[in-house]
Length: 323
Length: 212
Image (cartoon, rainbow over all chains, first blue to last red; front, side, top):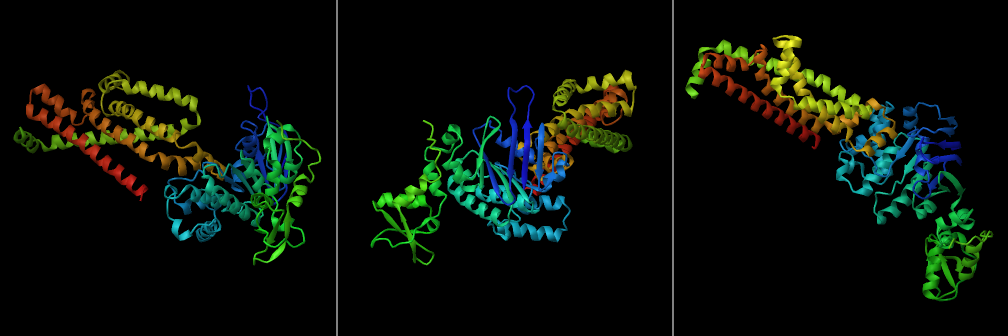
């Protein structure tokens, strides 16, 4: 659990606070994505949690402990930290990089070595193949995996991730996002992730907090954020295609209706999203799709009318994307 | 030319080896002192960037003072002999070490330092485990430059009674003993080249083990 209570960061000489009376609560095991235009205070907010930046006012509680007055060095050893430029130590092997925090904590070397291999496997790297190599021998995607392995090594309950996919090319990015998301969920980590990519925010976040000029504008689950943007700024920020984005959050298998599709209707796997379903419907000029389970058996249907109803659901406030 | 040189050394072995030994001791001591002063100072300056600019500017002024002038200035302050020569040579070697060390330490990638801070390394641990190892090649290059400068400049110590191979040159000049003069000159040149070669070799080995 991470809680920020009335946190402000004021730099003397600047016209407004970098972060202004921000209150935010991330329940244990959940991921909160901070997003907003540059200068909105998202990175400052994140860096106050591990005291890389000292808050001017307010209280920050991590796992029940007020960290505002904790020793920053030992605090940081309990918080995993992944940065955009990855920041692997170039003069150390991959194993030494991953071992950083366990060694600072004084783990016995056999335990450290076992943990290094476990972490490398966890992030999808072959320990034998990369353990003794240097960061410069690895691709950007592999380095990012090592960055996450290092942050997870001492099993911190809380992770801070600053644009963790920024240095990875777009093809690898989506794959890494899915993979890291499932790892973080499985380990039940409480995560604060900073990004400027709204699609990444919607994909990764249990909660998405939108900041503007140092203030929290809206913090909600992605579906609610897309359905009910608090104001024109949020609506504009999430994009004019927010209805489509909502559809991408729902799997066809979870949204299918009982029924049988007409003979010859196209099929869609239950694990694909309603957005994919819509694309197929539009592409094939049909009204209904057969949704198929893992063995190819039909589990129900998805209809154009059903998708339309779903897209409108909850969007009662009727705020249009700002034009 | 070569013949008289060896003849002179053969005839005055004690004078020659004493001078060579003094030269080495003086140079090594000055280099050691310069290291002991410059390296900690570079680390301290990392935390006071504003003071660092002033310190580097001062040291740069020090660097422009000719070695002979530096030695002669020590005369009225510390008198003659080994000690003032040592002080002057230390000051002479200091700039190359300090400037290289400070620049290399402060130019270690800020992202790497931030990552280290974020993992929970203390300031001292960051200096020891991250900044120093990454800056080592440049730090070492500064030490090599300083070593060669000190060995060369130590020749001038003879002017203030600091001993060393410069004694052979000054004595040779005084008595117009050309072989002695040449022995002194060649020995200093050889020692400077050897220093350069030895430090160069050590530097290459250092870089090789780092990039194994």
